[in-house]
Length: 166
Image (tube, rainbow, N blue to C red):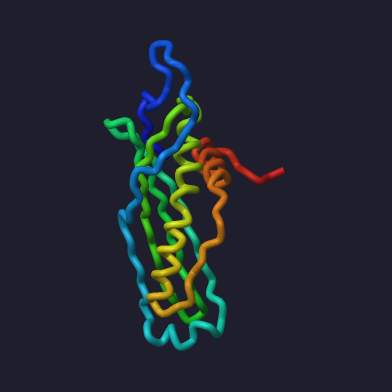
């Protein structure tokens, strides 16, 4: 799920005071982007007739760097299908470079895989909306994502547990 350095920047060293928790975004960037409109222009003429079925994928990944910073990637993918075929497929790998201070080692993974993607999401959402509009479709606006829920589900899946059963 993630590769995280053992040393956390901002953690108390040799009796120094505890630094308040903080997350700084140092850079944001598109790592990879793909948009496919395989049936254009026919798919554009009937775009508003029948609502397509949307399959959405969300992945988060984080890794520590030698300089004490963290790279966090948010991968969003969406495929719009109707009975007569695929309308569009979009995949975006959006990244950020983060400085995380004052966070205990046991809390660093949730910070990187929940809080950091929350910062990246609005920008990734806008890119996908703009790209779908440039592809000839109405802007595809992603609903807000519960990154804590996605994180919990992935952790449970990795541990072989089932979530949501009574």
